[in-house]
Length: 536
Image (tube, rainbow, N blue to C red; front, side, top):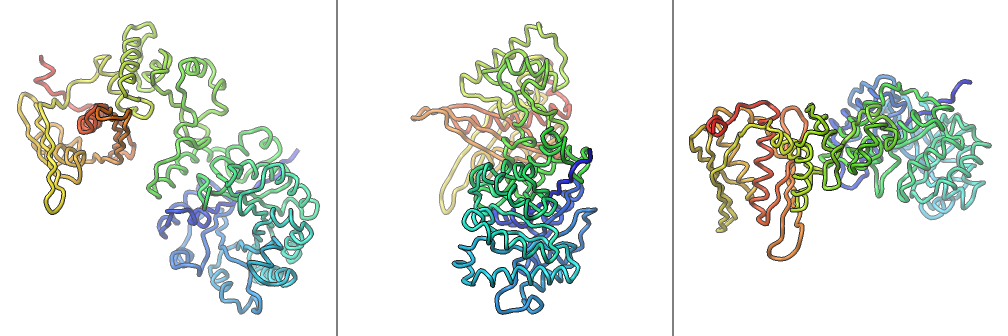
């Protein structure tokens, strides 16, 4: 039995750009569209030509989108103008895209109140706009704004809006849950009824996430008859976001409810690009990735409890609904005070360390982790610090940076000035490093890395090191509060690592995390040991 085709329409470059704090450059749009086309999405909506300088410039930029159909967005013509003479339609046509996606009202309440025109005049605007673009050989997609609210209020009129575009030759009629308030059972019922009037091969779904149901509504719409799904990378979008195509695509591929009946134009091997695509968007936006995203999040296949880890090692299907590598993700065994020996062994195995499960060093590492977490450490998000700790206890990490002393001074006159001094013992010599910064941690970081030309042995290892993020958490209240500091670092590889420090003194906690970051960099690059120290 042949399978029905599902088409994926990405709106990241338009809907995603409406997200608070998001402002794509032309270069950002080019990069995102190229990545989506490499995955094989059917449609990539670039934005609204003529609406703003960025979108206008972007549509004048040559695109390399493989087989993806580049699409321009706009809205139906205004009353009192012909489509040929409407200045808002001309830039969309001039964008010379293969397809156009035009939004129009389908909720009679909005026609009355927002547009202030008659229902018949709105129908005529839809008809003439569709005719205009189809006459000019554009694939026409009608985005029926607030369709579900309109259908619930006046189903006959909402359907009339669709039919006006369909009768003129529209390829797709997209049902929009614009305020995100429709629930899956309503979507299923309404799409099923609509598909008896408009063929399912011409129906699409555009869901917003205001009730956390955008993905559910999209999948329900497919089961009810829709054959195009719109969404964004990571669910980006205004308010609570849009349907997340990073979840929709693998679900359509990997869940039998859908894979037995439907197929995509995307090749299955491209699924492994989804995690990188998700994280690329966060990198462009300079945002921390959402660890809890389904399929592509860093925590999507994380296991913390010892019993869970034991079960996963025997049969991953126990706690993993798919194989992580199918979507380009990986299994993450977390070490914490809830961990058992199986967690430790799994993590060591991930580092390439082979050790017998009965080796007493495994129990030693486990006890050390639990003792440290009792005092405030948390290795959930500090992989590099745990790797150093475990390998030190296994005798695999040489001494690198021996700190004799350090100091930080903060002085305020016309402006605040922070200076730091660190004295290292390297190969029996005292190395004094000084630096200034916009705070204690920045000053310490600068003191160490800007002065390491004094230590030729390690300087080259730190030339590409960058401190990406610094987080402080107060673990208890009062004047003797314990402070936990987490530092994220990276280098030319683009891979980041996290280190942790804990102390009642925020400077000491920060310094511990910072030194761990430096030591980890030296360890992973097999730097030479601090000879005088290791000779003792």
